[in-house]
Every structure is written in C-alpha cells, then in structure tokens.
Length: 413
Image 1 (tube, rainbow, N blue to C red):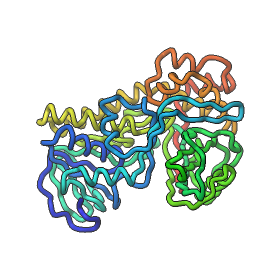
Image 2: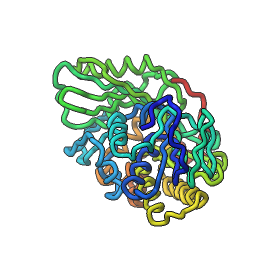
Image 3: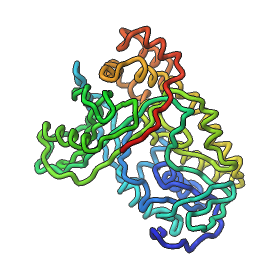
Image 4: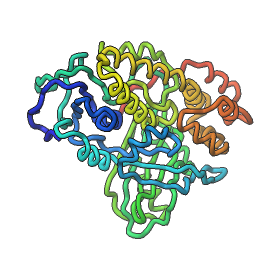
C-alpha cells in the first residue's frame, strides 16, 4: 500500500479509480481482484486505514451465496446458535446465524490480497470526473472509469430520522458468560435523553470472545446529535449491571440516516458527476429502516466486477448509468421500509417507539430474516401491518401517506 502522507509514485492511467476505501470501495476492489483480474485499479482513501473504525454485522441470510463468498474471505466472528432480543413484555431467541467483521480485520485482509501498489492511503481527492481524479496535492490519476464510494451525504431532498450509537469493546476481567449476540435489548430506560430529547433506545451486545464483549447504546432519534460522554457512561453502566467489569480497549460511534421518504431523482441530480459511477451509501444503497449497507455493498461489488469482466470495454458513462439504474431500482424496491420509517418517526411518540419494534419481533423468524435482507414478501408486509397496531390508527394512516419529515441536518458528535 502507498504509505500515508507520501507523494504517489505510480500515476499510470488505470482502468478504474475507486474513491473511498470504506466498506463499499474495499469490497469493489476485492471483487475486481477476484473476478476481473485483468482490470487495473487504484483505491484512494483519505484516511490512514481502509474501513475506518467500524464493526459491520449481518445475518447470514442477508447475503446471496455469490456475495457471501467475498465476505467469507475475511476473518469473521460467527454465531450459528442464533441471537436474543428482549423487550419489556417478553424475550426471545431467534435461530438465524449471525456474522460480524471489524474494520481492523477488513484493512488487514485487503492489505494482504489487493495487488501491490493498488491502494493509496492518506490521499484526499479534490475532484472527480469521467476521466479520472485529482488529488489534493494536485496529482492527477487518469482512469477509464471512476467509482465514487465516499460516505453518505445528507440532503434536504430526503426525509427521515437518525440512528445514533456509541459502542465499547470491553475486555472483561472474567468470562462474561454470553454465547449469543443480543441484537436488541429494549428493556433499558426509554425516556432517557441522549442530547436531544427522547428516542427509541436499545442496547446491542456481541460476545467477541470468552472474555471480550462489544456493547453499543443505540437510539432512533429525530436529530443527528450525540452526547458522547452521556452515551459512554450509559454503555459502561449497562456493562456493570451485567457484571462485565474490565477495560475498554476500543470504541465506535455512528450517526446514520433512517430514510422515510424524499425526492430521489433530485438527490441523484445533486450528486451526479457526468460519467462517474456512485456506489455505497452515497448512492442510496442502504436499508431505509435499519441503515444496513453491507448486503447492498457486497451485491454491488460482485455485479460491477462481473460487468467489467464480461464487458471490459464498458465506458465510464455506461458504468455510471448501470449504478444509477441500480440505485433507482433499490429505491423502488425499498418503499415499504420507508413507509415503516414514517410509522416509526411520525406515528409513534419517541418514548413509545419501542412498541413498534416489540410488535415486529413477535412475528415469525422467517419474516424477520426477509425483512433485514430487504426481501419482505407481500404476505410479510400484510402480516407486519395487521393485528392491533402499536400506534394510533389515525396517526398510522397519516404516516402511511406522508412524504416524510425533512431531515434535521444539524450534526453534533
């Protein structure tokens, strides 16, 4: 990999330049290496490592077999005995296998397997266009195609709320005793503010080893604000209540969009750079309600690599159109989840949003699997919306036909 902070040595024109070395960009680079080895590429990342500081987790059923092959290369944490959820009214174990990948392992594996000289770290991109990229130091990298995998860009053309979280990786003094992840513990105080008023709150727990546990305090909130000290204190307090005493050896924070509506065509127009393909969360490839990006990043990486392997003369404009049409299709196919997001943020008061999730998790395990994978069937959708609603019917109907509340854009972390 190109050392951080040094001038690039190799600016030979490339078949592809990928801008952004997070999950989407890193997986595209891996897919090109495995599936289109004749395609030369450069992956440019502004940070010092690929993947940033993240932990990505997913259900095994979220990925098609072709996409799973890319992720299975990495050293994953795996739990095949299912996972737990807990609500004020009940607790439950569901049998779906669960996977998790830390960004340190993401970076280490890509550093090992990507072609030598194909990665530039610590390099800010100043400009993108159909013919290549210009770095902040003025260096020009010419390319036949450019793929923009930079992070999500908030837009006043979108509506919704935010998922705000802070997690601690704790090394316990003694074994913690957990054998399964706790995907959602919503028995915690639902009226506890987190810097901007009430929100749906739950704690997420991963047993990473016999004596290491990841504990994350999460909020579905109207504002993208975070009080780090407050959330860190609650995360530590939760661990103490469970008897998990030890030292914090890592942490992660995030403020992710929960999309409930918007004018996607105007979003595309604002983001479009002629001839530049957009992938990842910036291009709209996320689950509107859960904010998951991994299944869609893996599918995009696979299909982009297949396209370039099978049609090596694909132009920059054709690749940009390919990704844009995928984004439009994804937007159409996830309309149901945006409607559920409106139900959450508009029909339920913040301290009562727990009832929406409690109702959902009382449904069948197969339905829950398809929901997270973004593949809910029409019977699934009817089942989710049937029965005694967890919110007032009048407010539910109003939310269903609403265009969504515009994003509150201020961001404090």
